[in-house]
Image (cartoon, rainbow, N blue to C red; front, top):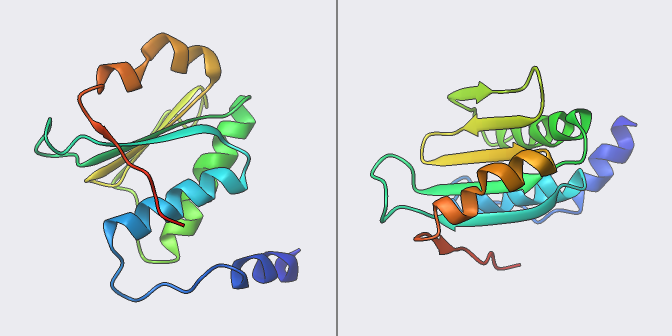
Length: 132
């Protein structure tokens, strides 16, 4: 299993020591996609708030799925010494929030994502398209 994971990681493009915010966003979104997270949306809300620049919102189908997504985001970003300042909601898994300071990642179950509609709340933000 470890060798399979190393082989998977070796297929990823190497990143410089000086990561850009786009690199960090790409790592997080790839970590979501690796665990089959759905409907990942990246919003730049830096014009609306002075303490958060970006949010990522995504969906997992079960509480175990949302936990796996959150775990993978933490794992992949920790490879670059990026550690969350806060982790909320992990125990229940219906809405997990990973707080990285200027980046906050929300991992929702479908019903809660539909209920809270964060994309609508932050509709003034700019959708970020990540280059391949």
